[in-house]
Length: 197
Image (tube, rainbow, N blue to C red; front, side, top):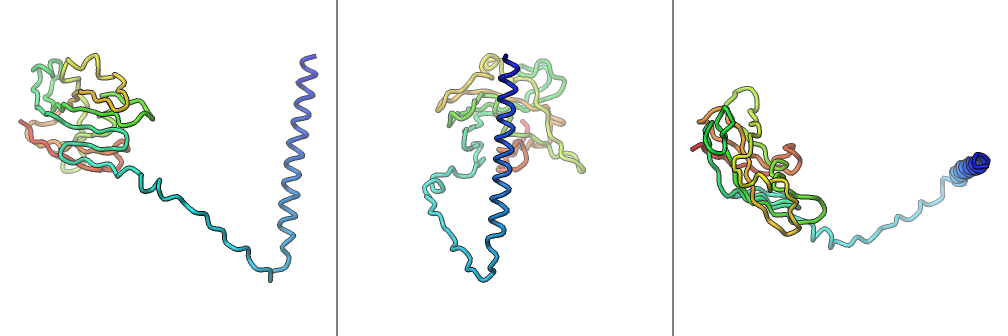
């Protein structure tokens, strides 16, 4: 019984689709044939009024100035930086020195989840010590144990959380360029250069 009902429904659906397709083709054909007189005036252009409020209220372009990234969804403020040698607190398990950044991140909206680790979505670190290729630094281990449990916490809208991140250095003399973007490094919106201490 169920197979019969299902088969009947499928036949009706197929008939409906065929009817809609046929009607559409016929309407298209009639439309194409109805305008035989080339001397007919063109239809008047229609204009639509646009409310400019949305444009005026649009967020400003993202910026990275004075160690503060301001984007549509977050604000990230770098509060401290430090070079940590291998084996020292904050880099106990690394075999190379790192540069560490401490920062505050504020969630400005509720459209998506924001965590303290979102810093990595907005920043890439480089040392310009290779004449041929860009030397992008790799993310190292968490340099501050106080953020071990909170680095993946969900930040409430309007809330601010602190965190730290580190990058493995390829030498201890070349300054580090921290480059900001809002599209995973595709378009630079600002850069800060940090000398190693």
